[in-house]
Length: 331
Image: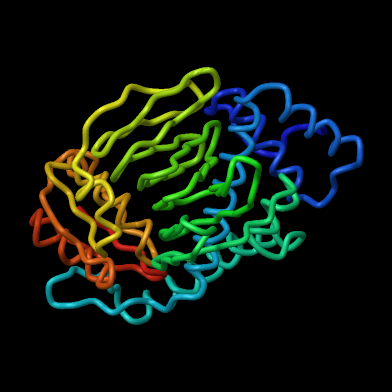
């Protein structure tokens, strides 16, 4: 492969390599030899494949964020919020500079994706997999996978389904799926898989990290040579390092999204904001790291997620500042 085209010195070497590969793929200049080299590199170790998948996910997120920011107008401020409003002349100059800088950034990021028409094309070109289902931010979708197997795909989910000798198979490329089964089903995600024949499970994939929650019945989770059995109310996480330990959770909280809610009990505000950002157009950013460590008890309605910033203000007493593109600063 040619020389790296991204400054990835702060990353783990394997992660950096994965990012270099996806950047090269997006350049549209990969040679047949490099395509073969990439295939060999991904097949060498599970860590290589996980790093490449995470790089694809990262680049997709960057692209979606830029396109989203370009598409949204400046949100108006309200009496309960502090808006950054310089004098009229200064505001015009500021917006001109912002538009110029924003346009340059958007052009550089989105332009890199011109070779591939959509984020699904990025995945298809890089891995050979094209999702059968794609769920956009803030949306969800229910499907009948097979006789006796149904799935609910959550926000920002990409997945494929198939029928194999073992029964129905769901390949979770990214996002989250709640699966109910009365017949055998296997859910592949990241470096492992979850199987059940009479149970309900929730599988969430964030890059190379996968969290599996058993809602009802039993499920088997396998990663490499390790495997555990989950029962109702238990959860396990696996990633590039291996399979973690099983622990108990409240399914009503862990999978509250199925009820149209986001429920938090003594959760750090940063975790709350990160979860809200999965559903909300734009982005909420905590300016003060100390604020992110503050514990929060709260319930957010997904159907009213646009009002989450105001709810955060009421819960914490923090000040919020709205900026263009759905960006909200919390300080």
